Image (cartoon, rainbow, N blue to C red; front, side, top):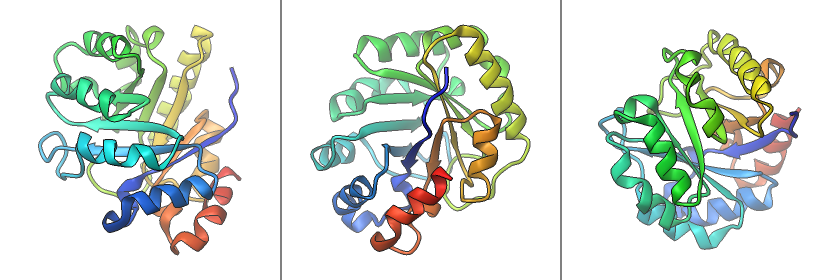
Amino acid sequence: MTHAIRIAPSILSADFAKLGEEVRAIDAAGCDWIHVDVMDGHFVPNITIGPAVVKALRPHTTKVFDVHLMISPVDLYLEAFAEAGADIITVHPEAGPHTHRTIQNIKALGKMAGVSLNPATPAKMLDYLIEDIDLVLVMSVNPGFGGQSFIESQLRKIEAIRKMIDKTGKDIRLEVDGGIDVNTAPRAIAAGADVLVAGSATFKGGPDHYASNIAALRG
């Protein structure tokens, strides 16, 4: 199943002093989703935002909130992020003992469910999950910080996951996050990605450049 390429700017690279304004600006600039990086300082070496900020941002846009939970244990917080306005909730297999149950819980909350794979996490982790999820997020950097360089080995993983998705015949999005810019975006797309998360590449140059930055990533 082929999809149009979707661009999901990561607000990790936005100006945190005016997040609502930044979300409105990337919406107006033509983004498809808003990617929200949630980090706990435990699962990843950084602390970002919690459900209260997601809830505060929700009235500023009708675009899909693509919420990536880099927190452990993750199950305790699913309901809070669902209630705050997340549309997609993505978790890591390492963030809880029973990933399948976590996916069931997300679905029971009425949300789309995603699984994210860190650079060292193999595609095989999806063998018994792929039929039950709506999205796979391949991390092409080690999670925790913006502005890192794309890890080349992840292109092979994207290709492998694209084959897995196509075999299911299901409507599952394949998203890539980390080091995405005008040079790496076409390579990720060629490998099979159909959603690109871009932080630095979207927000560089300020609001006047957001529309051209997003357009450049689409290729």
